[in-house]
Length: 327
Ligand SMILES: [Zn+2]
Image 1 (cartoon, rainbow, N blue to C red):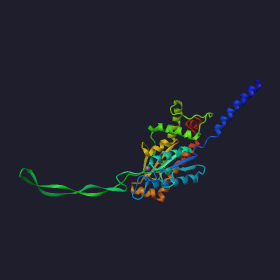
Image 2: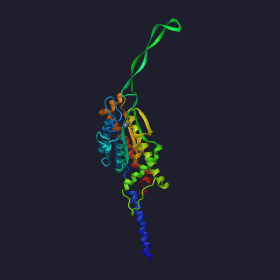
Image 3: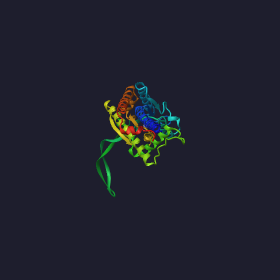
Image 4: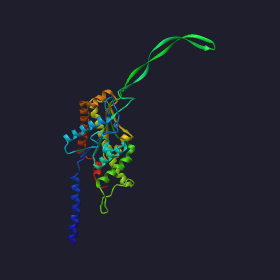
C-alpha cells in the first residue's frame, strides 16, 4: 500500500515536471498573426490632398506591406481590416467601423496591430492664398482736423497683394496609445482572453480575468505594460527606418482621439503609422508614387523584421508572465 502511494506520488510529481518542461519547450511563437489596418475607407475618405485621398493611399500601402510580410515570412498570418474602399466590415458609420477594426484584431488573436494613415495640416492641401502688404503708395489728401478746418496731408497707404502660402508641414510620425488610456487597454486584454478561451462552462478551470479584481488587474497591467513597451519599441524602429531614408522624423507620439481609439481597444501591441502629409504637395506625390510607397513599405517592414528578431531572441520576464495561461 505504502509502495503504491509512493509510486502514485512519483507519478504525480513526474507529471508536474513533464507539464513544466512541456510548457517551456512548446512556447508560442511571438509573432504569428499581424493585423494591418488601412485607415478610413468608404464613406470616410480621411484627409484629402490635391489629387488623392488618405483612405486610398493608406489601403495601397497596407496591401503592399502585407504582401512584403507574406513573401518573407510565409508563417505569419496577415489579416487586413479592409482590402477595398469600404469601411471595415462594410459598416455604415465610422464608429461601427472602428469597433469592427478592434473586434477583428481581438478575435483573430493578433500579436500586433499596425494602422496605416496619412497626416494632414494647414488650411488646405497644397497651400492657400494669404494677403500681405506689397508696398506703400504715397497719397496726398485733405483731412478734417476741426470743424470747418481741413489740412492737406501726405501719407503712406499700404497696398495689399495675394500671395501663395505653401503647406509645408511634412514628415512621418508613429503613434502609440496614450498612457492615460492604460485602463481601456487592460479591459481589451480581458476581452481578448474571453475571445481566446471561448465559452466558459461550469466545469472549466479557466476563469476570465476580472478587471475589478486587484490580483487580475495587476496581472493584466503586466500585459498592458508589456504591450506598451513592445509598441514603443516598434514605433521607435519604424521612425529610425524613415529617418534612414531621409524622411523628416517627427518622432514617436501619443494622442488621445477617436482615430487612435483602436490602439487602446486592441489587446496586443499596436502602432499607428502616419506615412506622410497628404496636405504637402511634395509628400502627396511621394506617398502616391511607386518609389515612395516602396520605400515606406520597406521602412516599416525592416522595422518589423528587427522587432521580430528581438522578440524571438530574448524573452523578458514580462513576456514569460504574459505567456502564463490561464489567468
Ligand atoms: Zn487618418
